[in-house]
Image (tube, rainbow, N blue to C red; front, side, top):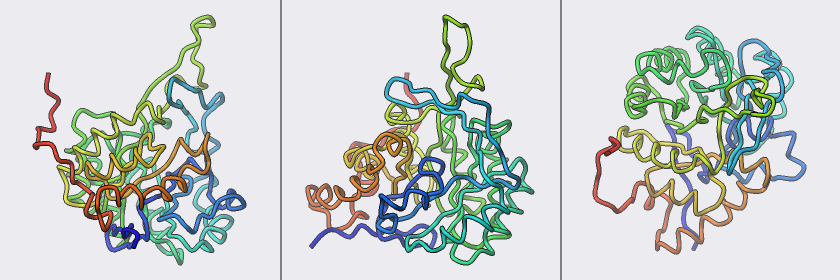
Length: 312
């Protein structure tokens, strides 16, 4: 008998822990022709904002050593476009759809959460508190009080599972995670991209249309793994891992240090089948450990407990 891959996040039961990260698989349904989305634990389409956004000026992406630097800028059709043009197609999927939202202020998060919560079939909301490519985009996740205020405001109008997506661009991510938990978050998504830049020294210009962008892909995996471990030690709610997950071995590392689920992101750009390959490999990896379920492995990191502070 194959191991049980099911997990639960704030009352939402998923048949397996593999998700598609927001912004990395388009709006998902556009790719349905070559990928069976219904096999996955959940999908998270592109982040929705209150008004349509055209995104940042190009160039928007630059390849780096073992990673990708992007400055997309949350381009999307806005709330009305999502409700009238996209949701009908997304709601027809048989796997849970978690809707990612982002706002410029607490009130925009609240308005979005209310509207999205009224759509039949929405299973959960992910609060994008940490996009580094828009003005003020990471402010909500760099300060525990601001993070808590947004989560609490959304919790007052939405009673479903809330995932708070945090930034790695802080000195104490555990404090922000605890604030999100205390305000009513059902899970923590860790992490968004690392702030970076790329320069063409011959032209003495940025290779991006904006100076800064978000670094993702295998290059950030060691940082993401450390943060997931720290957050899992700091909170009692589930942690959803994101950051450089490309193979089943990557996924298992995150499970062992405390993640209950994973999101596959940048890997989908150069290997669109990565999420499905990881899913297919999980039963064998769990059986190698003699585990009858994923839950037996989550947080089973065997080394002695260490301080979450970086030791010099």
